Each structure stands twice: as C-alpha cells, then as structure tokens.
Amino acid sequence: MVLRITDVSADAILLAGGARAILLQLANPGVGHGVAEHSDFVDRPLDRLHGTLTYLYVTVYGSPDEARSVARAVGQAHRPVTGASDPELQLWVAATLYDTAMQVRELVYGPLSAEDGQSLLSDYAMVGTALGVPRSSWPVDRAAFAAYWSSEALAVDDIARGMASALLHPTNVPWWMRVLMPTVRVITAGLLPPELRAAYGLEFNERRFQRLVRTARIVYPRLPRLIRHAPMRRYLRAFRARELP
Image (cartoon, rainbow, N blue to C red; front, side):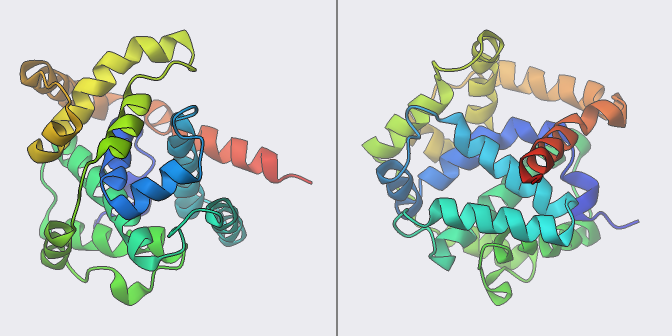
C-alpha cells in the first residue's frame, strides 16, 4: 500500500524535527525578520511550534470545516506580520515541514520507495495550499523539490541566531522540558545541513546523535500506536475544546 500523509503525520517521532524546521524557516530572511518584528518569539519561542503542530494535525486529520477554521486562525494571526501572506514565504514554510518530516521518517524507518516518496510529496501540498499557496507552486516530483530546495537563498543573521538561541535554550518552560533540551539540541544540530549548523553556531556531538538514531530505529517502530499517535490526539482534542461554542 502506498503511504499517504495520513499514514505518517501522526507519528510522534516527527516532533524530533520540530526545532530543525523552525530554524530552517528563520534562515529565510523574509520569514525570520517577519517573526522577529511582529511576535513575542523570544519570550515564548515554543508557541510557534505549538501553533504549527495544531495547524498540521487539524489540516491532516480534522474535518474539512475544522481545516478551514484552523487555516483562518493562522491567517488572522499572521495578518500583522510583514510578508506572512506572501505565497513564496508560505511555500518555504510548508517545504521545511515536508523536508523535515521526510528526513526524520527515513532516519527511523529507512529510505522511502519512489512511489511512497511521490505520494507523500503530492499530499504535503495541502500544508501550503490551505494557507494560500497555489497548488501549481508545489513541486511536481522529488527532483523538482530538490531543485527548489537547493535554490532557496538562506542567510543566518544575528536576528535568526537570537531566535534560535531562545528556541533551543528556553527559560519559561516546565522543568521536564529543560531536562530534555540538551537532547533536542543534539538532534536539531544533527538534522540541520552542516552549513546552517555552523551559521547558527550550534555544537554537534555526532557520536551521541548517531546513538540516538540507532536507539530510535530499534525502539520507536515497536511502540504501540496508542503511544506513537498520542500527540496528534492531544492537539486535536485541545483544538476542538477551544472551538466549542
């Protein structure tokens, strides 16, 4: 059976790439400067991650009405942000989510077949089109995606580095999250392209990263679906509770 976005997006292991996706987004100056100028990212760096996860889970697993509702909410939140309605910037954001999800999945489950890769790429178009990216802008195949990805002009400046530091060294978070952050920093550094890792000034312990990957390959696929899909169910419940009249 060919993999679809509904088969993979609920996997909790994809959350391991959350910070990587955000740092890639911030490396696009149009995205990074807009976030810095019109949000409290530095004070509440995890809010962007929570908002992104809510959007993804509702878009993929919610009803059509719920998907439209979460897209409107994201659009309203982005309205004051310079460039947030720019389809090119939204395309980059959607591309970082797709690329990160595929990288993490392949690290844990192995390379995708050509058929699965094409199916998932096509499905992920919905992540951008729900926010106004023209369907025609989404790459038609993985070669086209690779060409688009390599052509994107990224530049990590002091603004991006400051937001990255706030994201990877949060202070206003529960104690258990602070305990997890050293591991998050290792995973994030390992998932980033080396040039961006260096641009952000991230330390990288390759031995520990590879040990974490080996452990995930052995342990994660054997976990019950109840555990692997728990974050998706939690975010859907929270969204639906807020939507109740």
